[in-house]
Length: 310
Image 1 (cartoon, rainbow, N blue to C red):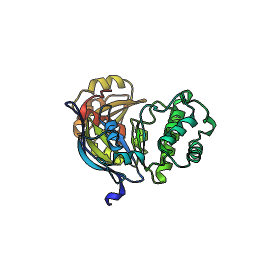
Image 2 (cartoon, helix red, strand yellow):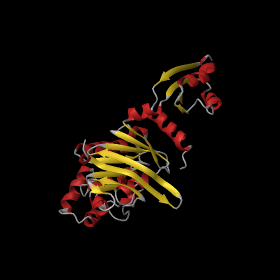
Image 3 (tube, rainbow, N blue to C red):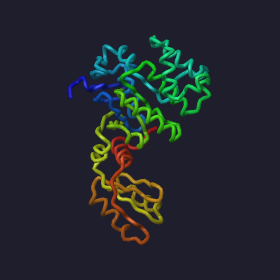
Image 4 (cartoon, one colour):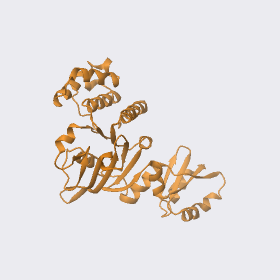
């Protein structure tokens, strides 16, 4: 695969604020037409990295290209060919849906703005809400409007920063169906998310922890890289069991899932030794399981930075 096959190809991206390094020599490659997930706890540098990629922030070190354009010298061109959706709804709440899109079209100085707006209203099922004030939309409809505004200028790359935070499951599913439709037409997507089911809908994922890129690959590869052995247990007294073993060094992650408890460790033999006394207890049913992406996510977070700092 040659360089032109990558929508994002950056090396050593670094950003500092005072004596704090927020992003520390991060390198990313995202093939064109693919959906890549960006995972990691809060404060890990995901948003800062996204803003450097789309030209909103200048890196203190590093180099590379976005859509074949130099990250350092052609940031203005990158902005015009990229759609960036922020965590917080960032459009004008006192304008209608149509007026918001018309304003975006004017900012980009688009040809045939009315035709483009009508097309995007139809494709995002916003036509019936064209006169509604953006501030009166629900979270899911605000999300649709934000995505409509991002794709109005027909970008080649979408950068989405936790775009589905705070919306209901049906709205999230509808949003991801639309993202896959766009990718199927050749659009490249880099999306940060905390939802494991969303990460599993990506072609591949990056895991960043506290400014450092730790692992990348398909979901299966990222889970395998964690090297976890996982057991589930069902029965009475699971919370008490969790409290008794959660601080044991052999336990990498432990969490309740409904009526079961998931327990994982990187040393399978050591973990089994810890669990052995409990396996003999009546009323507990133990099953060896495949580790999930959430198990791996929590493991990486604990390993590389401790608890989520919010």
